[in-house]
Length: 124
Length: 124
DNA sequence: ATTAGAATTAGAATAATTTTAAATTGAGTA
DNA sequence: TACTCAATTTAAAATTATTCTAATTCTAAT
Image 1 (cartoon, rainbow over the protein chains, first blue to last red):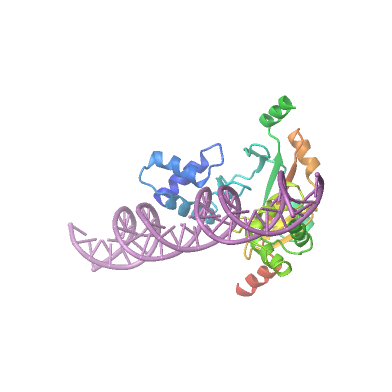
Image 2: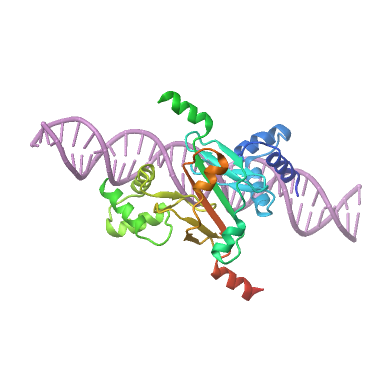
């Protein structure tokens, strides 16, 4: 694990949002102000390949990165905010229904977050 | 609904794969050889906004488009092939666990498809 | 026919990410 | 210590996917 790899892993593991490569780059620059965006991309790719972090692909925004604790994502269809939640684990059910093993799964739930819901009600 | 909109909807609804904008463009050109890629993107966006088709965002490949019948996706982690399947509907369970209504959800299952599984066994 | 509005086109522009080649760093070793 | 090989990082260009802009064309109602 390289210097920047370690820093990036630390940033991803100790943040409470879902940063893009650009976000991570900016945060990393505060620690090591010599770094360059391509390095961030390189390391994010390596870390994903090694299974140290996971990539969260969301429609209409650049890729985001997240820790690997098993959890699902709620995505507000109004403002795009992403919230973590852990729904019942589906692996076993899925494997039973399929009849063969799976690797992992990715569950994204589209909803209207409390904030946007309030706005809507006020507007209506 | 416009001429190209209708054609594109027809292509998406009557195909058994998960075409990208480019794929759709090529298929559309066989029918109407004057069309241009931007038109395909425009129409795909409108059709998505109208809920006539759905966008399938897969890591590491351009967006794909699919019909709106409720189903989930199996994605081979080796070759990237996408297969449809309908797993038990989770909407109710999700809403119960969350305590508020959801809009929809998107379930992607990562696995090794039969084809790649065979290859692996031969290789091992 | 005329015209207003929408759809389409061509092509430039943008955004996100990857690639390339050179420079730098670092670890192990003579 | 100096040397070397490989890996990492950098800078910059390239690529890919998609969007935007402005001009043109189409449509369908007057």
